[in-house]
Length: 275
Image 1 (tube, rainbow, N blue to C red):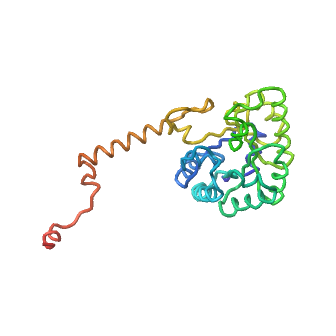
Image 2 (image 1 turned 180 degrees about the vertical axis):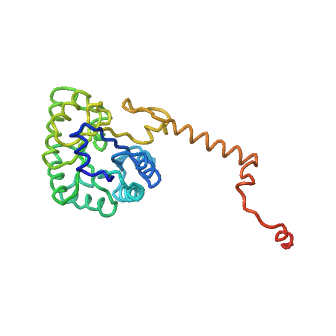
Image 3 (image 1 turned 135 degrees about the vertical axis):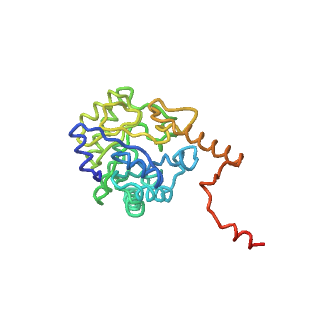
């Protein structure tokens, strides 16, 4: 059954956790969809995971549209949320609506996601009035990493916590259908979740949210080195991929691949008549 804004809100009401995961291409989206995730996020994290950028700030509208359309072709039941990249909505409400429309029309998204709280409530309201579902994103917002001075947990002191509560209520009032909370203390995220009628999706925000999201390369162990505190590796697919490629290299060099069963036949008489 196709996941929609209505079914996702019903999940919150029935305390049925929402599962969100990232995907950036047709093949991965098809796998995630068939696995049964409720919603796929085409995140601007593709800048890091797919394009090799140091951050998400260099990602363009064309990047997001290209990847979102590919995901839409692969996912049949999952609700597809596509990120609005840096400076595609911050410049004006008008730009926000136009670019959100492009992600829906050209990128085939089911909803757009933008970062920021009460400061961007007018943008959210205008996009929603254009009949485009909006997912808000508060807490640690990666597009603002330079303003934050790095990747840090948000809302730890009283004033910051009050600001996050106000942000959450503001985006709900503006018409957001869901809100992602990133790197927020678990107790605060749970409190916000209880006060909102729209679903909350956590990433580094504890189990009290209505659902969870992870970057698929993180949850499948496809990165070596530093791993965020909130990431759990559910399958070490990265190592399995390396093992598979190493075996391919070895058999190719040994001449054992391709074997007879991988080859096409021709009658010997045809070969003999070539010379």
